[in-house]
Length: 438
Image (cartoon, rainbow, N blue to C red; front, side, top):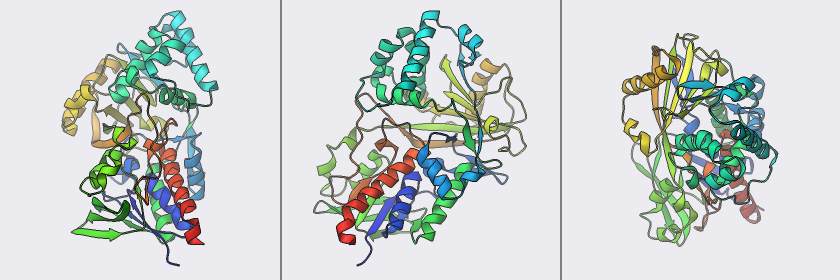
């Protein structure tokens, strides 16, 4: 019997993870990737033969799907673990909330600090985050109080989505606090960007199993007939039609909906949960400087006032070998919410100047970069709004399946959760096709 042919849109973690699982089960797989290289959000850029992530990436010790893949691909033994310090900036002063003295100095009253500790303890102990807890504002006020919400979490929600906590899901926030991702050591591979190694190994595995990866191949249209996936058109040097038995879409829902919008039968999915899911874009500016920061940190979350950047990651604090000149490598990150949209079309030099002014307010000196690189990261995160629901993996159009971090709510989104979403889609396809395979 001929192998079922699966076409996968997107060679990010979800697409590559799905392909490996399906190829191992005997399916034929072709992955179409719009960019020139695989990796998606976990892509990289190169400066003087050194590789850097498009935006901050670290390996979480509790990210079981990622750790399992690193071991499977024989990468895990190269991983080094290090604790990263997370600090908070408020009114141009920096606080380490894990330091008892600095926690006491943090600008909240004593009762608010006690309730903050209660919140963190509650989230750490709670295991099941699937039951709807309502919006983050009401949930935070009930457990931690209004002062804690307004001082810490409202600014963090604004940084992440540009939305008030009343719009966002308590389940998503609570789940993030439960994982306490920065409380444990973070992983990296010395001397390089570990995501580049992972991407290369995943692509190598796909090809080794007989899969096909077509890069610089942007999908233009998904063709549906009689409520069933039939083929798709993609653009390379010309527009090419490729037929398949099964389709896995790993692009964001709004992108997928555009690809099927010109199909006569497309209206049957427009009332689907997919239509309700929004995304945000981000700006990631990475630079290297010979200057040293006065405090050791991995992440600085900027609560108040609202700076041009939401956070600063000092990548060289985690991986001291990452730089070109063994200098300090810093990643400024801004979510392009309504209040920061004015930054979207700034050049790298213009953005560096804007960031440097705000940086000086906090650290007292201007940055002098050896080099800097700007990336506009489109659709970097789904918005987990109040009442969010995961779409079904299997579409109501026959033989179309979905994978991606927008299906993993309320679990913390990570490299591993994206991989796992692809594997879940593959497992469902395998189960659905079992009688035919036999």
